[in-house]
Amino acid sequence: MKAMLDETPRDAGDGSPIDCAADTQAIRVTLRMSGSHAVTLASRARAADVSQGTYVARLIDGTPAQPLSPDHTQAITALMASTDRLAALSVDLNAFMRLLGRAQKSEL
Image (tube, rainbow, N blue to C red; front, side, top):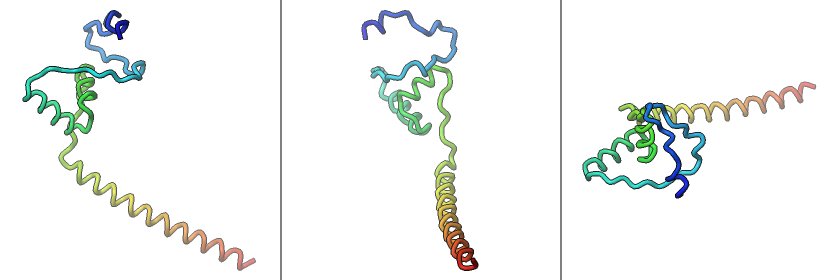
């Protein structure tokens, strides 16, 4: 940990995103802020469907997470219904293929 604190910062202040691919280990950081800022951070991270750490990291990179669209719940519901229909179609197609297999054997 001391070596990390002693090394020169990678961010030279040029505003470019930090290469997160090299950082595989998450490190706990404590931020001190007012209660209202903490509530705002929590609500915005929740609205963007990311952790607070990821939200802050994206802010540092200059790529803040976008909040979910207002119809996100409807989109998830539609996706689930579509998946259910595809699963039912798959069952029907498998049954049809088995029926075709039996019909071809009986014709021989």
